[in-house]
Amino acid sequence: MKIVLATSNANKLTELARILEHQGLKIELATVAEFPGAPAVAETENTFEGNALLKARALCSFTGLPALADDSGLCVNALNGMPGIFSARWAGATQDTDEANLQLVLRQLTDVPDVRRGAQFVCAAALVLPDGQEFTVRGTVEGRLILEPVGDYGFGYDPIFIPDGFAITTAQMDALEKDAISHRGNALRAMALILEELI
Ligand code: ITT
Image (cartoon, rainbow, N blue to C red; front, side):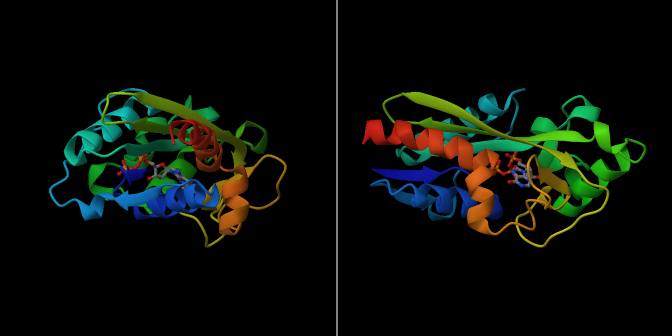
């Protein structure tokens, strides 16, 4: 089975491919870059699953191949679950760098004490097949946010997120350590069970 990964985020693409390859499935992976003219998809739904489905449906219909999308983000308790689905553009569409987004969250939490700095990474993965079948799964990882970024691995909000049960951020973990506990790892391991059935 050949599956096209519906993301234009290079960091997410690396993790998706790495985690799927680690599952040992008999699948071949393709990327959006291999399909010039693939449509950019507006994320107009209000759930991770809804937006993941929009991205997977668009690429499945453009390529004629099964498409797998990831919609993910950081949900901060003290911000009522935000940035959530807005994680990639939290600092605004014109300054949507990982660094600007992370710094804005830190500023918003300036007066929030340690005991109320809980947060959760969420990943919804959607698989859409050319015959119209659709599947979604969700993976999460609970943790807390620290005061200053620490660590050079990963991307996005990793340098400020310490998962429960750990003393280091996900940006201090190597790839396999992060995949073993991450929201994306958890979602894709659930999706791998569905893929195995389909294959
Ligand atoms: P595509 O829609 O093309 O896949 P995107 O970057 O717009 O790319 P999302 O809408 O799913 O993707 O936004 C995901 C954002 O959530 C991402 O830019 C990070 O800021 C954050 N995020 C997701 N997974 C993360 C992780 O493993 N570590 C750190 N931050 C993460």
